[in-house]
Length: 236
Image 1 (cartoon, rainbow, N blue to C red):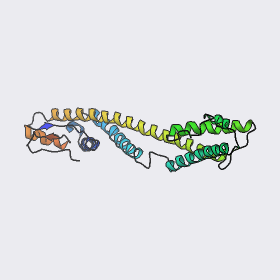
Image 2: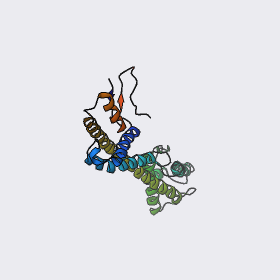
Image 3: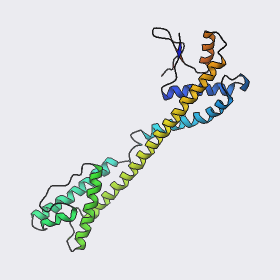
Image 4: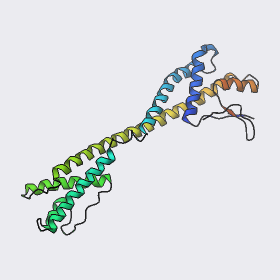
């Protein structure tokens, strides 16, 4: 005995909605198998759902979910920051700067190891410390470290922070679009269920085979039990 199956993919949902919408637009209200109120809702929901799915697909593509050249910006910011600290360490080794110089940047005076700069958070945190520390050291009368200067480090750090913030906004937008899509998907499922219930009720007085055929015209999907041929399928 065939059983009804509601759509479980977005393409199947849109197919069900558009089939009902198409018939709703072509059929006189007094002959329509579902209520005029649902047709009004369909006309609002279908374009909104289609647009939302399209925007979500765009927001999740690799070229859209990251600032252009972001990886290169991160690489340059990390290189200049680590080079600055290495130059500082070499100046200490040569006796040109005292070991206490490291403390201006939040490092231990006796520890020549570079701080971890692997993650975005580490790069953001240590970049801020080093830039502020060098400015403070110079104000205290220290000679500026060169090759690279802190000005160059600051330029790439600024680019990194701008790109990091832009990426955060992109991720927030994508997350918001995902939530919106989920809400519209829920509304679509509820509307399809109600429309299909109306359609089946409308044709309930017809013989089973004819009833199913008429319902299928409206996009209702039926499947036979295991090893039985399907009356109609959702497709892909």
